[in-house]
Structure formats: C-alpha cells, structure tokens
Image (cartoon, rainbow, N blue to C red):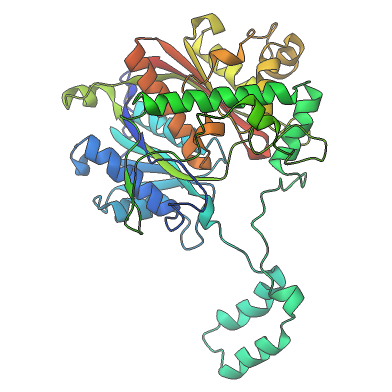
Length: 434
C-alpha cells in the first residue's frame, strides 16, 4: 500500500489474535517448521475473523530460528496460507521480543497511515533448528558444490580431502551468547545470586505459573485464543503440553540444578524449548468499526532497550517497563494487570526487585525513584513461559493476545508487559482497553 502519511489522528486497535498450542520441542509439532506453524496461526486467525483477504495490507512476521531456505518467512507464510500474492510481507527478528516488535511495527504503520489492516505475529520451531556442518567442511565443499563447472573428479578430490573428525561431525546449534559464551541459564544463575533470589522463591513462582496456566486451560480461559492444529501425522492438537497443574514445591525441589553444580535454576523453574506460533489482527480503528468488528485493546505506549550482556543479561524489562509507563504518562498505580515473560523464575524475580530499586531506576531509567514494589503473586494471571512454553518469536504475540482478551473480558483498563531477550535486549508495552 502506498504511504499516505495521513494527518488524521489514527489509532490502531487489536481486533483479535490466536495462537497454536505450545508444545515441548520434539513432540507432536516436530515435523512443522517455523513457516508451517506460522501458516497454522495465520489461517486460524482468518477463519476466526472472516475479513476480505484482499484488504490486508501487510503481514509482519517474526522468527528467531529461521530456516536457511528463505530469509523472509513472512512472505512464505503469505503464499502458503493462500493469501493474495500481492500482499507484501516482512520478517523481523529481535530474539524473544520479536513477536511484540512485529506487532508494534504494525501499529506504527497503521498510525502513520501506511496501512489499514495488518497481520503480525511470530513462530518458532526449536525442533527444526538446523544442525550445522563445521565451517572447515563448508570452506572445502562450497567451491565445488556451487560451481557449475565442477566435475565428478572434483567431487572425488573433495571427498578425499575431508577429515572425519574435523570436517564431518555436525556442530550443535549454538544457544550461547555470542559475546559472553554463556548459556542464558548461566547468566540467569548469576542474576539469582546477585539479587539474592533463593531456590525456594524460584520454585514457588514456577508452581504459581503452572497452576494458573492449568486453571486457565480447565476453565476455558484460553478457548478463544488457542486454535486446534492438524499435524502432518494426522493428529489434531488442541492444547498446550508443557503445563503441569499437579506440580508442587516438593516435586520441584527434587530436581537437580541445570546450569551450575550448586545452582538454583532447574528444568522446573526455567522455560522449556518449545514449538508454536501466534498471530494478531491489527486495524485502523475506523476500519474495524466499518467492518463491524469490536476491538479488544490498543497500545498506549511501548519501549525497547538493551543492557550490557556481560552485566545482568535479562534485567532489561526493569528499564523498558518504567520507560513505557513514562511515555504513557502513567504510574504503576494506573496499571490493572501485569504480564512478564518467564524465561526463568530467577529472571522475573530479579526484574521485580530492580523495579523497586531506587538506585537502579536512577542509574538506568533516569528516574528519581523506582516505579514501586510488585508482588510476584500479582503478575501473570494465566501463567507464563515457564508453564506454557516459549517458542521464542511467538511469546510476545501470545502475551499481547492474552492481555488484550483479559482487558476485554474483565473490564479492566490497562495492562503492562515486559519481555527480556538474548543479547541483553528488552521490551515493555502498555495496552489499554478500547
């Protein structure tokens, strides 16, 4: 769509959103890559909101584990979903904040007058993270494989030159920070010690997450946002499979540390490797009214920040959430519900401590005082990434969908979101009821 740069005061609204069930990696979504999961989410969204497809201006999609066959999975999702091929599409990546970033890009485009209807979201398949051959193999093989003049002799010479140990043993996909060499859990372990977060506190928070997610599933709270997905194996998957509503402190206390010999982070108080996708329908408010669609919420503000990954890698939401509040002209007292991405219980509890720390607010946020104390029991009403799972690029969209529905269903006015990400990036956002 041509850029209009309208001088009208346009507001973008969230009309609705859906997500696939979130499944532990290497279970029923193993044969569905990021594109397939994105297609499932987008088609599910369009089945729920039967708008005329030709009116969609753009699909802004996000991914973290991107297949090597294409750099723009958003475009492939448009084509595989059966949408008109003239709908343009963009793929962005900003690690775990990607889904929210895609959505706020859509909101900004609509409010600048560049589009009226945009689908935004994200998908990731940890099960399909590509196993990489050693770079020594690539350097030897590429000149032969990529040459149109390569002969059979060239291939035999290539085979003869390979060293089995150095060239032919695949390397594991790296999930370590490129700059620090640390696993994210190792960084979170350091945060737990630095902020005096005990194992018991982490396990208590994890139990809360699982019990709330289980209750949300049992009561049908997610029925309007989780769509069933047909798998290539012919199964119809209805619900998340990581949630453990029967877990207890006693059960979690028996788990061994996952990232340090004497550490406090375990598989029980950390998010799991997950497959899934989520899609959100965003419109010009006037367009939504014209189509007879009732919006759920709109963005009041958002903020994206970053910290030094060598310091506290996942502390960023303690900066982005206050920044989003400041930009909205709001204080913590104006917020009704809070949703924070649960990469690790230790990370969430560290963020809550820093949100209440005046010195941290002065140094990192330019504020005179911290925004205030938040009780861990008052956040993440329907669970979070520890219980539901964390398909990296879908998590931000999942949070927006759940909070937009929460505002619409509960009659509450505002929701504050916070997300941390690899590399030290972070995001904060405020949704308001429409």
